Length: 327
Image 1 (cartoon, rainbow, N blue to C red):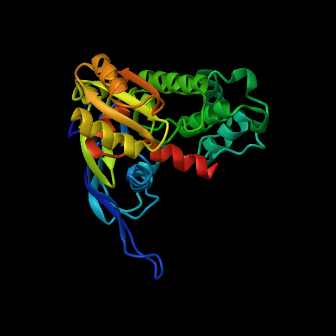
Image 2: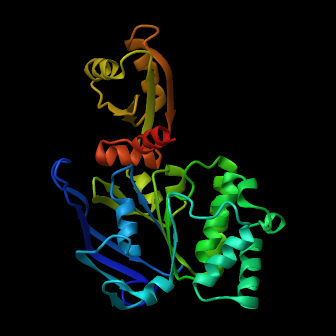
Image 3: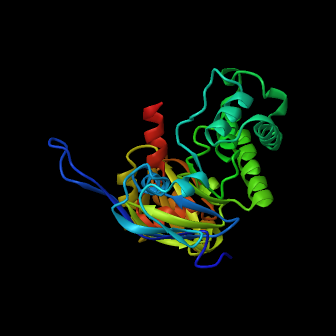
């Protein structure tokens, strides 16, 4: 662990979006956010759209004005726009920031030039990063010819080519298929192991959050839990039964709660029940409702999505629904 609480230490960070004349009251986007991030550590901010995770990254990166809280980087407190800190920082935004008309190599050389790295040194760094990202054989093609997963990896190596100590990732695998997701995370883990970079990733994906060393669970601008993924899941020792209703899920939830004296939660349109003997409960549920009321029923061990629902009463599916509308 690094001295003085870690590579990045945050205390009391907050942000309020002021109301415009016709848009209603001011909105608290982030409140009393604390974080210690150490060298070579990957920490995740898990939450749905509107939970405050992107706001936290924007404040750290200096993209939003910081009016409350303190940031300390490698033992030095930051104030205002700090160019020395910016030089040690890499950012991958939720929306890709690469130029699709340029090749991967050209994107990297352009980014390195903006960091003051040019000539032979820049060419060597670009070559190394493209090799690490397994893109050497496509390095000189226009990005418009590459897949979405490949472009996202170019976006990542563009952010780290100058050798930052801290990397901020905002939904880095949003929209990627499973193969691209695994390649992206393999690259992140190689990067961490080889350079000791510290990574802070904002995500709504339970499978992505599970790959982090530690998690902060955010809901409506507040941190509701912080622990390792394994310890958070261990808080739910019971099986999780998920039910898909043929009709109104709220009506079925009320019926099951009354008939079997169960605590039933709604996750999007699914009913979620925690129970120590899930397989036995399934039999009782099927016997207690009329045929055709249930279209699917499963039992599984808890996931981080179940942990979030248990902690907040809200669903991570809100983020996925928002993405679908945006698309």
